[in-house]
Amino acid sequence: MPMKITVLDAKPLDDGDMNWTPLRELGEVTLHDNTAPEQVFERVRGAEAIFTNKVKIGAEAMEAAPQLKFIGVLATGFDNVDANAARERGITVCNVPGYGTNFVAQTTIALLLELCHRVGAHDAAIRAGQWQRAGAFSFWNGPLIDLDGKTLVIIGLGAIGWRVARIAATLGMNVIAAQLPGRESNDEEFPRLPLNDALSQADVVSLHCPFSAQTRDLINAERLHLMKPTAFLVNTARGLLINDEDLAAALRDGIIAGYAADVLSQEPPSEDHPLLSAPNCILTPHFSWASPQSRQKLLNISVENLRRFLDGTPQNVVA
Image (cartoon, rainbow, N blue to C red; front, side, top):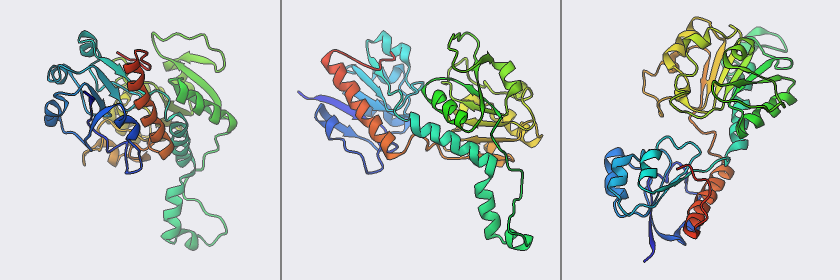
């Protein structure tokens, strides 16, 4: 009998432009656009392989699917899957590293440049007639930041962090890698400093580390106060790396100069999310993974993860 394969949340990946035929060649595929928490048990029941992007798969969901052998995470981060429970049950969990490296790095730089140039605000000012009223050939309504000679601190020097660091270097920035506690490295391409020391030197801090119990609220009131009042913070990693209340207060009080992020602790945010009303805060809707090229690569690697598992040579195994 063909393998029963269930995709719990295909919609974020597929905007109507993805081809699922290679996955269908591996078994009987059921695609769900989205799956609410109360629908998980019913939809995983009977499945031998499931794919999830953000739907949480815990021990109880695994118990509801006794035939389950494989969980494919349609993302790099896999904190939505209980890895320990999977190991205990002999379920292989695979993720997709590196599929969006280029576009996430591009988004990071775009957010940083928006903080420096305020392109959107200047476009709005022109349409509101401010340039015309200024009566000069050139107009700006806030500080313009030249990145040449500024110091960028990268927190998480993996594939994305490396790409951002190299782009920043071409802009004339001095790049420092922050050394997180317990994560030693002897790499010498970029100088490394302990996290708190690096924060105090930063003109820009860019987050690229994974979320874990150790990195939750990594940027909090204490660490924000280590930064310069002229410093920018950029986050294209995980919203939960930030303490939202502490950051909103720091922006209101001028502790740092600005924040730009493609991720939030709650996605989509509630109407009262503290960062929605914070000054000098630019937010985009978690689209840094979503270029067509990145999504197609994600799907291709996900299918190959299952194919390799079935062949007995699994790849990208995280549990």
